[in-house]
Image 1 (cartoon, rainbow, N blue to C red):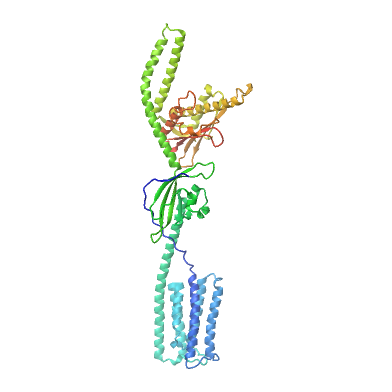
Image 2: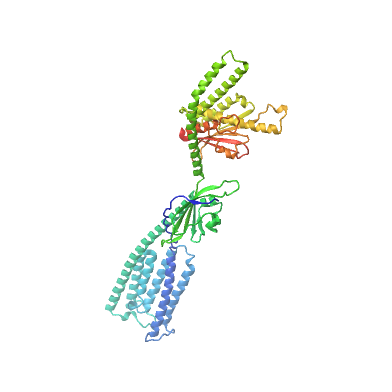
Length: 592
């Protein structure tokens, strides 16, 4: 880790996202509640019946047939409740099972009404409760069916008892036919009208409740989907996201944060923020967002430190009080690499402009010097030693002129003459030309690529791409020669091995269809000693060279040509397979 420093101005923290409620209740739970309510009504009814009998003119005598019948009816109701509870979890169609319960209750209530006076019974209100219970479960349909059944049973019990069609129980204190015709009609109209009104009101309220339940369920499902989407988005973010409470304990962390910090999400949940970011100073919870830049330690020994930007913002609860902090970790590896490439490009552009100016000023006087030397060399009055010295001067002037020409070629490139060609065939053509060069006499160039023709088509300037491949092949050959020379100094080979190749340059040409930028890629790999790490960031700069007699313009020209073709060039040294150097050329498909 390194010390951190605030960079950008503070910004206001985002508002919290509302938390979802619990899952919707079980639709069969209301049947359970109604069964419990039914048992409570039976218990209250039992107490009322006992109280009425105790306060009546006739004392409670369980020996009478009437008392025995009423208590038998209550015990039967309790037994039904126990029976329903025992079978509830075993029944698949619980709505049908509850419809049977309502039907049984209609019969029990009708019997109780008959035993307590028929049309004048004080327990006729229980019919209304049955209508409400059925409506809660079956809505309008249940209200209609139950109302018809209740009214029909009430009329049968009231009229049948009044006309003595349904006989009373022995010693029954209130007989159904004791009511007058006027009372019979009055009670029938009041009870039937009241039950119908209760059914209409209950059906209306039940429909409203059903509509509200449906809307609530839709809202809960929507919230649940939004929560899942939010979780998926958070986990899919390439930016690390950590939430901490007021004490600094980590409450959650997404996969990107776990990857950057080299810990699993379970490990993160048991730690505090200072445990994973010890050099980060947490701002007070009341402060607004702050931004820092720091470097994370590598997750393993072979990895490099990761530059990140840390943004800390307060979290707000429903009461708009700070409940913790939100920490964002932005991986700046690609950005840092782009910044380095931009700085290098700016530096190369400045050097190019300077080199172009110098080369232009040198070229004309150099031509004059060369012409004068040639005239002097043609004179007959010079000694042999003078002729030799002037020959050396002419060769050096020619070498300097070649250097100036290369410098002008780098600083003032020719316009591209692009055409479609097969990069694999071009690589083989350049390799065949290299085989005629004496510097490749003991070095072989092996080229691999797809067997099908036309797989590696690119739209490029053929002459400039030949120059790119020639420079890379030549640099690779020089690296192989240096490596072979070092090995020969350590263990000089026998005479039979003098004609053996000093090494092999591997060239691979192929198409890349995956990644953000598909296209054609060329790799040139040599088994040489490699490039030191401190020199790799300078190898594409003009005049930078590690070889005696080198101009330092070869790779600079290669880099400039790749930029002109909107391609990229990268270097790996050493290569992942071992020692050596690999140059990777990439031509994206957008050039076609």
